[in-house]
Image 1 (cartoon, helix red, strand yellow):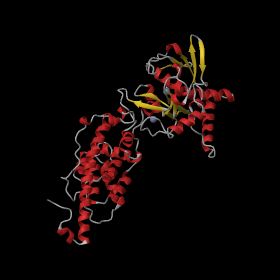
Image 2 (tube, rainbow, N blue to C red):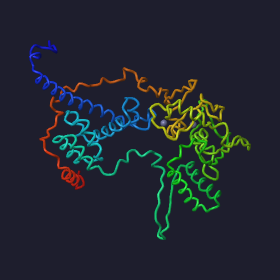
Image 3 (tube, helix red, strand yellow):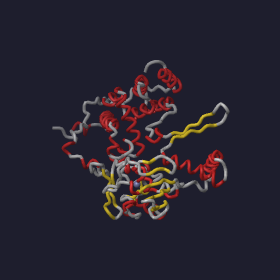
Image 4 (cartoon, rainbow, N blue to C red):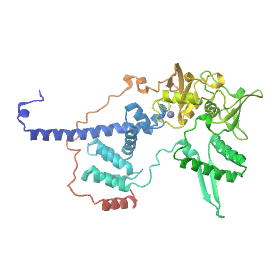
Length: 434
Ligand SMILES: [Zn+2]
Ligand SMILES: [Zn+2]
């Protein structure tokens, strides 16, 4: 039987004790790398299956941050490394063997793009035979302008482009979601009408106004509340809006149209009604029920109180968004849901859209408290608690097979020839097969 304080240990000099401590730390670092690598491969698997969406969050990083208590930036780094481990088996093997540290993997993950196996091999050599500081210098040097991570659906669907014509005139083309396009159109027409200028002049005028507002450093433009946005008129027939018992409408049947524009799906209409981002002409049997700015819109005071209640961010569990929050009526205004604190939550645009698309739902608990749940009833604030312990696998954490000196560098003390190293690696990177 072993005890921590054997007679021989007491006889060790402080010098020897430090050696022992140092080798334990090195051995521990190797096992940590192995454990981290194994854990990150789980994250990569979760990421590849879009696991975060099941819990109503926009990204694996947001989910990690919320569920595992990682700072947002740390979570982003971990996800990037996890994806790199899944894409480059040698990187994963290096971590499993305790040779490649998390810091090494993070530096490599920043530069290596899909399929760049040779670059990863080269950088692993730099990691192995250099210091991590040297690896980071090389990686930063190789890092070109990229980082177009995860463009959102909206960014993919919508676009604005321009081109120079043969006559040296400037052409602008834009593709936007209908209600957003209508907003731009309304702005151009309103400026044109108010200032008695052409639409082309109005577009230039809009640019001037926007730039002037941004340049006015003393009074930067603030975030607009829903009811303060430019008014776009949509015609809405109450009789055609099917609302079911939990307040959400059948999502895809159009019940409204933009003034002289296309029909809008119900989910969009419900969302617009919540927020007053457009001015709705609410019709029932030819009678006008409501024209926008009335009691269904939150007051400035209510909006501020809602912000305070939610700590300034979106109410969806785990969502860090603080910008452009929409006031959502939990029980829709159309079926009598009041515009008061107990019936309102502020949601970011993404969560407002996904709520009306029925990706999740909100239940009123009273006194301004709400429960966010998935379509199958899981409490999104505590998603892991819903998993039965019996369904959880045993997690292997020991990694005692890792070589006790795996984590330490093989650096021979040479100074890094930065420019030379980077140019050689860049040449290899862009020449021939990877
Ligand atoms: Zn809403
Ligand atoms: Zn959100």
